[in-house]
Length: 152
Image (cartoon, rainbow, N blue to C red; front, side, top):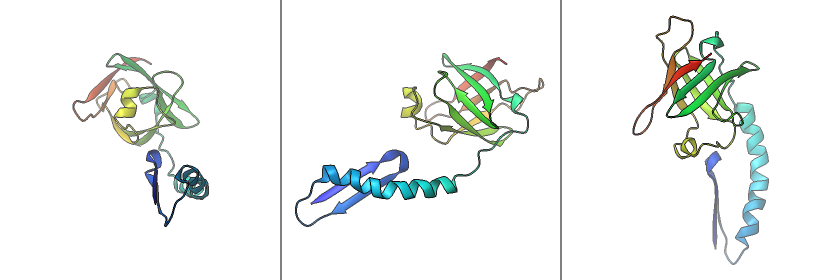
């Protein structure tokens, strides 16, 4: 007998081969109950610190693109983006033009789920004279998505 079980978000799978019959439905949760707690604790220790810009006001504001409004805000020296006011996406600052997106939970936006936005790069327009970036771009598989500052 064989059992294959996966947790796609963690890129983790358990494959077990048995000689004889077994109850795979009860085995998989038991196996993950044993494996996951120490693995999660280990990964938490390895998690790198989220980058924060020297001047967050350059990015804080509301942007619009594809009929969606995205609000970027700061809380406890972390930048976040949200399009529904409920689900936040951490924005990891890399340099004045680039950040990476890390959704804090499953997104309410089917598009971002289907495009696998975990670790997606965001490129801010570097040509700003007002002290605030006029917009940003998210590269796509088929087309890039542009967001223009509308408030803030």
